[in-house]
Length: 366
Ligand code: FNR
Image 1 (cartoon, rainbow, N blue to C red):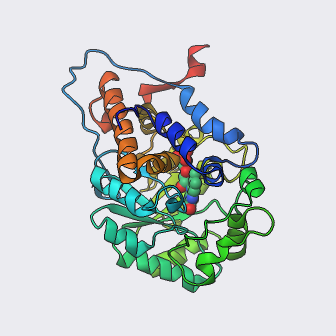
Image 2: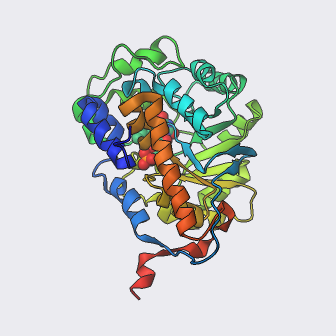
Image 3: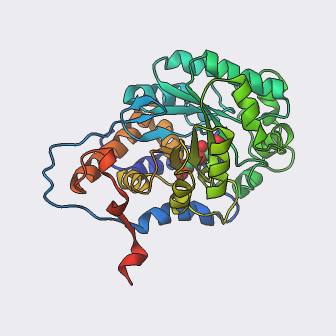
């Protein structure tokens, strides 16, 4: 494991090891993948402004998210079908999150069930990502199962009326390998994804079964069936963030779905200031995902007002390389980089990461 010094090292090793169809599914963004590259580039356009001689005596990366303590402000975003990366799939990722004291989010379309994940990592801080199916009984059942299994929040994905166009998946006629199934379901809901016909089998599955007609009223409905806090995942506009807050969400996750939905949308870090300003008057937490691969990325997002960040693909790369151990390695690389950033920037705790610690590169060339 020592040879992996960066998340990029894990990514390179994972991409070399995974079969083409899986590799393409995990790494792709929508259409031309402009936003996919921008998610990374936008972080690089920000500069950290360290303070000198502040008397560093160590650092504290811990924080509190929706009332629960986490060891660092980095959690794992939901990514579908993790058993394609490693035989233990979601159970390994959840165990890694448990060992590292960070949040694990399970996808609705996972290859390990809600109950399997709960059993594998009973003490992990687990959230459940929800897609709303046309059939509300199916949806209700998922939420109740997650609640019963000890999951602590529902991350409702709000950016997916249709699945984005991912060219590689269309070319590859992507389907789930036959030995796997969508483990939260029985019958055709669990294996319909095996038949593709034309194009991506996943797109067929989603576009037939997920409800594209959702509105903000859905939050009211969700709140009527569960006491768990609801996070709106996929917000890219300040006005939508305010709508989520007014609808009763406890948090918003600024996300462009890993640039997999609509190409040409902004990088998430670019819209973060707009979102934090829009919800200032509400009691909601703001998180971000998309393109986070280093400790300095985490630092920049926190400086611009995120309470924490999440990583999607980096967990898949760690998982593909070495299962639970690989995911822990990924988390520890980012943890170490974040600890170094905190101290060298002259800020020992998270509340000290104020807005002035980061500036856009353009402000230096004026
Ligand atoms: C995702 N994402 C996602 N989101 C969601 O709400 N439900 C899901 O099932 C999935 N599945 C999924 C699969 C794969 C392969 C990827 C790469 C992404 C989006 C995910 O939660 C997150 O928003 C992004 O992955 C964050 O960007 P990075 O960290 O991958 O750059």
